[in-house]
Amino acid sequence: MSSNKGKDIVAEGSSSRSSAAADQHQQNPPPPSRYESQKRRDWNTFGQYLRNQRPPVALSQCNSNHVLEFLRYLDQFGKTKVHLQGCMFFGQPEPPGPCSCPLKQAWGSLDALIGRLRAAYEENGGLPETNPFASGGIRIYLREVRDSQAKARGIPYKKKKKRRIAMKPKDDHSSSFPIQ
Image (tube, rainbow, N blue to C red; front, top):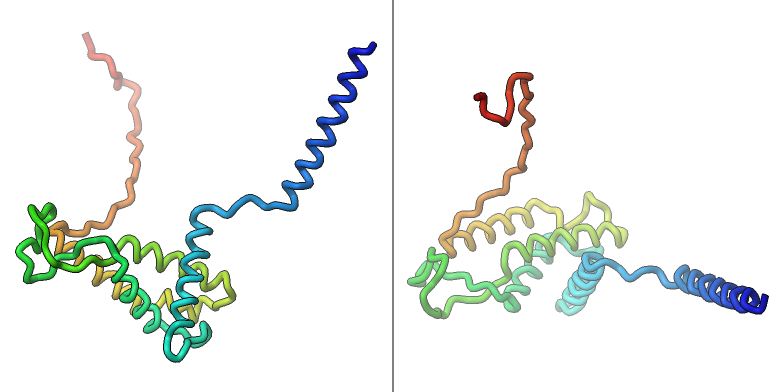
């Protein structure tokens, strides 16, 4: 009997601990995903960029030109070597030596950034019809960056095609074993 009392006490203690843990879990939501964290960080960075403009730009006054200026501003922090047309390594995917061509943001990074900012704009109360990140000018700019970086590397950009899995109907006479 004494062994049962000990189990009852442990069971009571463990249930009170688990209910306390459940209460704490309800108070603390799970941490945001990596994507959500990056989206918030990008949104805050863009907001800071607008506030640092002279004169400061209110988010309600932001347009695609401000977004384009922001993308060009980010180039100074890029890590992708983009060879200029006069460079002897222009068009070479694996240049044999160093050159003085500028470092820029990679097209894929800019494309992903615009996708996150486009979503963040609407999540923060912006209307899809007025979303400066969704404008045609931004899409054209990204296409030009993609094409110029592909030419500079000598590797043409090819859009990935969706894979279609075609099912071949099996007839009754086909077999994976050879006929003897």
